[in-house]
Length: 314
Image (cartoon, rainbow, N blue to C red; front, side):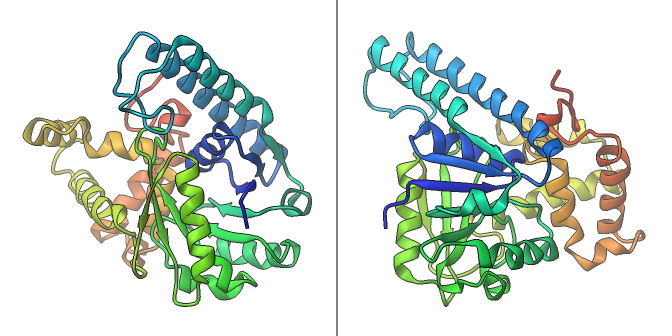
């Protein structure tokens, strides 16, 4: 099977990025969203991505690189006319995206469905049970879950042999990794189809040999972000000082709270509250959850896409 028709389930931080990058690479892309209000929230994200792509491509006319690898290939020179062609691709991507609340219509001819819902197991299970009878036999279903195992969800999909995880890093046009992780029941042919799709949209497929909570990237990143949040929640230091410590001491371009703003505060909160310790307000996890919810989620400070998280972006 050759993947052409791709459906994104959810238009959040990563859902919108995956959809736009896939459309930029010439695929037919539909984004399913729960409501008209969700469509309204997704559209500015897509416009923002378009503006970023066009700005980077325009700058490339006068630069030898390096380029964001999801946009242009490094190691070669582009003529202004070639760059204009890529800008036209970016315009076509935005214009060609279909946003809909009609699930059956969205998936009726899908070759690949990528689920990018919140990191809430029961929400994913309920959605899969609704989705299963609507999918064509050919369709591969992939999840972009940050920390959950495909094997814990496969039984609810109606197609465990065509179900696996495909996990992207944030800012996928720059950090162009795609971790491919099956479960014991995943058909190797479906696994390879998804790995090839990842390469076709400008990602570097990272093949995992077996399941691991957090894949490769989040197995390293999540403990780092949790450690930073624990220092903040226990009032060891304010978040600016924690970020400054990391940047100055390691030479990293940004600290953990800048990264949390990119990841999205809601995603960080959902990952955190999957740990039972978060239910106890006296534990460090409980303090972290309380502060994230009350100081950020409840006040609409959801991260860079909202214009403000730990830092302001307006």
